[in-house]
Length: 164
Image (cartoon, rainbow, N blue to C red):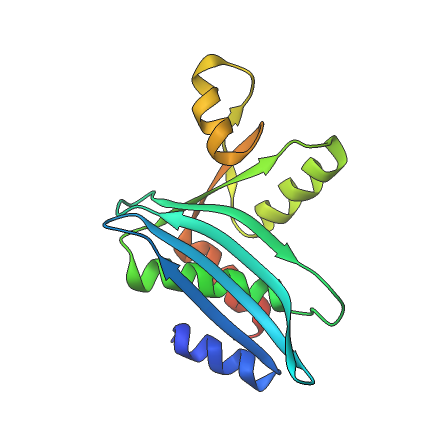
């Protein structure tokens, strides 16, 4: 049996991590922020976060910013991805997620492509300089390759990497 969000929070806590999801929005639009932090004395140190939003359709999960920072972050990214996909599967009708491998510079773009592919994301469409791409470039913040993933597949990959 695959772990749910509560099990993922417990998993993180056993490793000294605080996993939290912050959900907002109005109506069908939901904003999402998933964060993982570690207590350092009397303060919390943010180790990683993912931001995105969803609309209530099968391909409605749009992921924007994924960042892991600092030292001692082993497994933080996988925990954040697992929680993101678990939330989508448990609490939304979204079954596919979309993310942009932004093309700020070519080396970073190649790293993003490798990273996202390992999570199950596949190329969907190139965002370039075309007139029809302008609205999407404004939403995503620049040109790049839009990639799509099955939430259940991304969840399974993340859970497996965590050792479940």
